[in-house]
Image: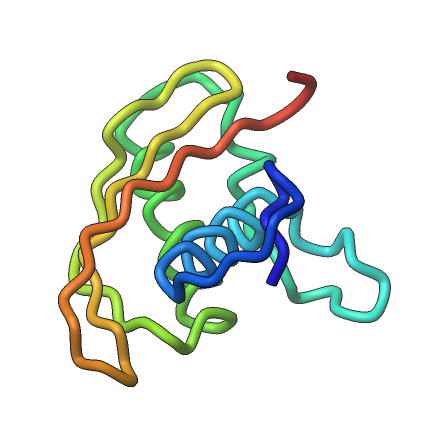
Length: 114
């Protein structure tokens, strides 16, 4: 897999998983023609007014697509560590399924224009 940031080959499995998670969560659900279910609802939620209901919807918008599309990990816990307009930082505790290794992944998501 090629890094979307550098164009270099990602040789580390953990880096490939992190990039995959970023792609899944930052892709609007329904935007891929041949894979309408791929992606998440986070792009639609990111700029809404912050309240308790939105927080629950964000956690669901993280957990559900990762359960469907990223089978290399089993999620133990999710924490949203930063939520600002156009940016969300996620901390995931997970288990790597093939090695049974515990992972603590920090996933930054940027939505919209850079």
